[in-house]
Image 1: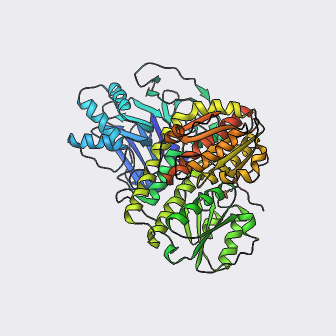
Image 2 (image 1 turned 90 degrees about the vertical axis):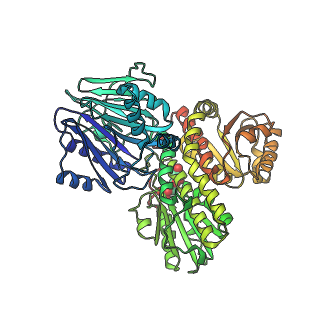
Image 3 (image 1 turned 60 degrees about the vertical axis):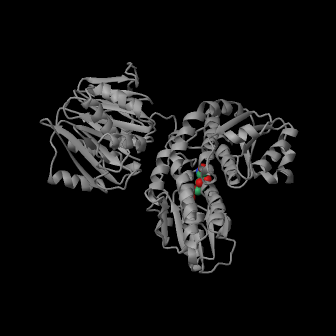
Amino acid sequence: MCGIVGIVGTQPVAGRLVDALKRLEYRGYDSAGVATIHEGALDRRRAEGKLFNLERRLADEPLAGNIGIAHTRWATHGVPNETNAHPHFVDGVAVVHNGIIENFSEIRDELLADGASFKSQTDTEVVAQLLAKYTREGLGHRDAMLKMLRRVTGAYALVVMFKDDPDTLMGALSGPPLAVGYGKGEMFIGSDAIALSPFTNEITYLVDGDCVVINRKGAEIMDHNGNRVERPRQITQAAAFLVDKGNHRHFMEKEIHEQPEVISHALSHYIDFTSGTVKVDTAIDFSAVRSLAISACGTAYLAGLTGKYWFERYARLPVEIDVASEFRYREMPLSPDQAALFISQSGETADTLASLRYCKAEGLKIGAVVNVKESTIARESDAVFPILAGPEIGVASTKAFTCQLAVLAALSIAAGRERGTISAAEETALVKALMEMPRIMTRVLNSIQPQIESLSRDLSRYKDVLYLGRGTSYPLALEGALKLKEISYIHAEGYAAGELKHGPIALIDENMPVIVIAPHDRFFEKTVSNMQEVAARGGKIIFITDEKGAAASKLPTMATIVLPMVEEIISPMIYALPIQMIAYYTAVFMGTDVDQPRNLAKSVTVE
Ligand code: M6R
């Protein structure tokens, strides 16, 4: 995820900005840049790749100036090259941005029709273009900023600098975090307290909808209408920690809300946005493979189970899947005309690694879907498919799960194309659905929170919860149950909805909430029949569905969570959001240690 930092100082800032960027490296990035104002001129240095490339550029061509902004970019819109690196300049306006401007293409078209010319492929450039246009039209900087904020939608943390005002930086946020730091005669702004820790430990976390103007004397915070608001200052211990929770109570909450951004980043790695096709460079020739063996643990296994539905449906490729602790001892007959896929956030899980080594010894081509690219599982694989979720700190996996799903969806489409089992038109339609996912995720995250919080308060009073789903909603039912028990310690089970009458129905009574995951897809009617069986026995139903599904079912529910209508391929990622939030808020009400639940470790390197 992108990192931002800005200084209004009394001494040269370029070197200090780069030092602050180093603190943000943990977020992941693929290019970086810094801009300053000196003697009335705006100037910048940018470089693709790691920060030492930027440092080298600065050593060759130093930047003077006591005010500046800097950025580490994690590409979402546009490839990671110098042209797309921030800061973006338009007519004396400099902008750095973290997040996604969702209506950028509409604004860009409008500005192009107005005669603007764009230099980058980024969504960010529309912000600089709008600010330049509004100031050309005669608005002051502050009014231009507020007008721009009312025009853009999406998730953003922005810091802006105007060439003709070398004493002021402006910032704004809606989604990604931004903090203001207080120094002695200097002021700072950055993505988190860690970025600001070399300068100050006195900070204010801004909240969604805030816009801030900072100069050497202090900060003025307002809402998007320009009304003054107060935010508390606090002393942080950020220097002592590797990563920071920002405005969130827990890393898990932060990671849930990061999903639109990280999925967007992951997709940019696997999708060619221009041609609307998947781009997967792999040592595995799916067209020559007889079947696929998938193995993983916990949440990663459930991502793999979802992947099985996709590989079988879109690529007509048979998939064998098992949890790694069983797979490794199954003595499964394997042959070199099969391939194996191992899914692991950490890339270090002992059982998954042992399964990988077993398959390797049998001569299979090995693929790894991992978050940590330098991990053992990645190093021992023939093909590595990074999920690009950024560091996941909460023990309960959230953003890694949806990024694993996004990568598996792209791989299954690529396999379908290679095997000739999907047409070009089908590929385009599937890719289009994937591309819409970040926007829909943002919408869902913004809309369902109050309802889920109140539902979770009720759920926290129960001892057992059942989750049901069919098709790709079945692995999600398992994931919902895993997430809930992992962090709230409430007993939960996930079942394929059709299995209900083969045993678990005996558990149904008024003390058993049943969470039914049922988008209005080809399985909907069947799942509703299973819901009827629950209702008939006094079970309390929590129905997670879409607009059509909510209209079609007349059954009484404890709660109905209505999501937007989405294409079938993205429903596991979209429906994962309420599932994660139910677990999160229930655990918060239970007062458990959400990020470090008892008995669990983030990386399980023992058998
Ligand atoms: O690092 P890995 O993805 O290999 O970890 C696998 C499981 O330990 C992990 O998914 C675990 O189930 C999570 N805590 C679930 O939230």
